[in-house]
Length: 177
Image (tube, one colour):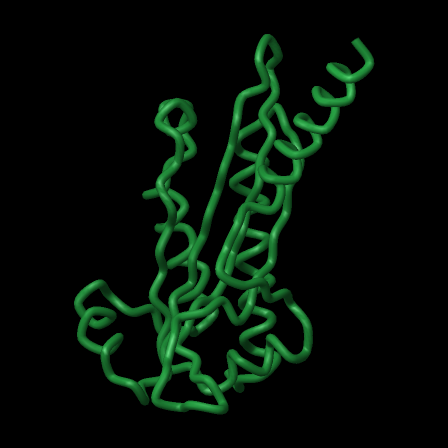
């Protein structure tokens, strides 16, 4: 029985860590070095990951998150690229643009009026290998994340706005208004 309990504890911890820090191709945070990667960006494309349909039915939608994110960026004076502009410029190696990704994962806690959430706001942009500049990749160069629990999806939406505002602050710490 002890071995089964240890396995259950290990499995539960593994699942929690997987939920809190989902896999990605890289990790960047909001520090001086990652803020420097935002310098000189002329356009930001906003992409919001799909949200669980059950959560969208409760009012927290990817469309609403994208609309609010675009509004915050434009209000701050950051150029937001349309789908057409992004498609046009993403293949131009020297165009200074990035993709702002908003990932919101919300799960209902069974038999409770409570949700757990994991929110990631990150910048992806083209990067080159120093040893072989002909090789370029798209990588995460700036990232901020928050996880927690709430009984209000409005609070979760507020946390998304807070993280977007942190990106705006990071952006203007290395770009003049």
